[in-house]
Length: 169
Image (cartoon, rainbow, N blue to C red; front, top):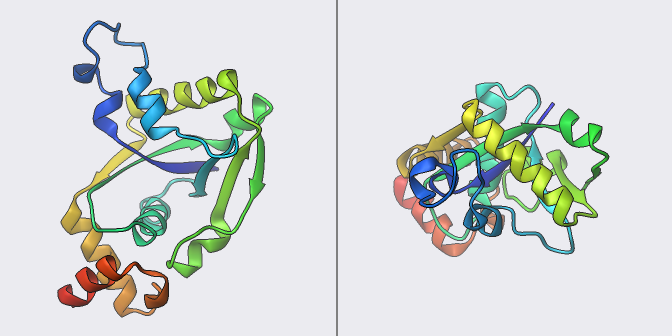
């Protein structure tokens, strides 16, 4: 089982790391992409990370955002986090993509060391190409398709995102 999370891929890649070795993780990547709240970090379950499962995680994230943007997503093995003793709690996801509400999980009780382990897993996932960029138009096409099919709830969308989707129909 994999867990997916949105990142800013450029922050993790070698060209954005002047003065750091290729295997070192920039602090900007950690502070921007692994920002915790209440010592927890939010993820979406994406099964075996098939194209369909990754796309569903992207839709869960994109539908819950303020506006339409490109989206980089990374998926890491849940088993690694479990092996290291990370505690995970299933919580209802905040997304208008209703079929994903129950596929949300928080990794809890994080401290400096545990957050670093997650950062290591993100870096490994990027090196192993367990990440994907969805261009803004691709995200819009996915949202329009699911919205038109009734799988994205209009009420849960922000006004700006709703307008963007409705204009694209």
